[in-house]
Image (tube, rainbow, N blue to C red; front, side):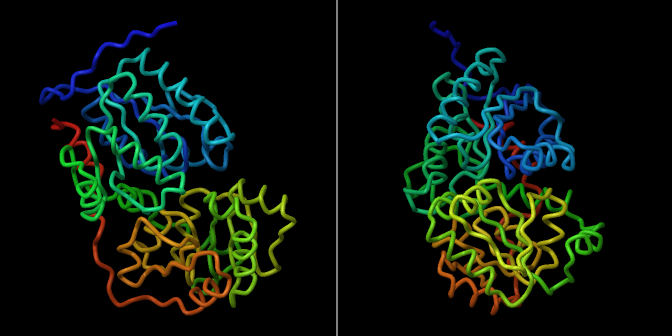
Length: 368
């Protein structure tokens, strides 16, 4: 069957409300959309599509509830599978949504398979794309997220960058138009939802005292899909001098079970936690150990040293300022970095003033 789709106009007329299809599917995207959607909906119509990339209650429904995100208008429920299968299922569902609703613009966040599928479906149906977190680069092409972000940026009309460095990355690749430095929407979300009113109860529930524990998270395929790296990280957590709270991504739990890995007594391996609980745990930790890009920034904003369990990061400003240490998956380096973690005397404002959502909407109002 051939699907006919009319060509979308390339730019809006000032003052005309747009119909925007927003695509989310994973924890970081829920957080970003929670900051942007209320501001967006004051001027425009939004259809929220949830691909189901994070599909269990702890990874999805909990975030929608506590961040007061509107219920998705469309749920694809693609679940977990290989990159190719997951992306293909998303493409089918997103294309159908575009054909049915005929949006003026598709709004995408970050670098997940949901981002890539949304970009490909929009490009194939001639709908302009706006990409939040455009220009981020690890310069590591064997990293799935890097492919997703590079392809999405190449297909986007409106490139919404969190920092000047991200904008420079785009220009270095020959992308010269449609670039807007708007700041980071996760700073907006942190100020709105991560205030910390119930922090004492969170620490008590997890049996830890402020400044006397570490928090660790792992989820990236480079760590969960590599037995040697995952085993080294687990050894490092066991060797730390303070208790470790370890919210486990389902992918990590499955990988550890398959490899016969288990954490020691001082590591409290728990299920995924919601945004508010996670921010409370990070805020009062001695240091954060993570391979999450979003948590690297959140630790920076909260004034908590970070040890990144990767060999590179897109958020290089946090490393250059001394708040973040790249330790890879070397057990000795991880343990040493976490044990020596200290707070530098200064934290510069690299990622805007917490008004990224408003600046994103302003850019969408005037794109050309």
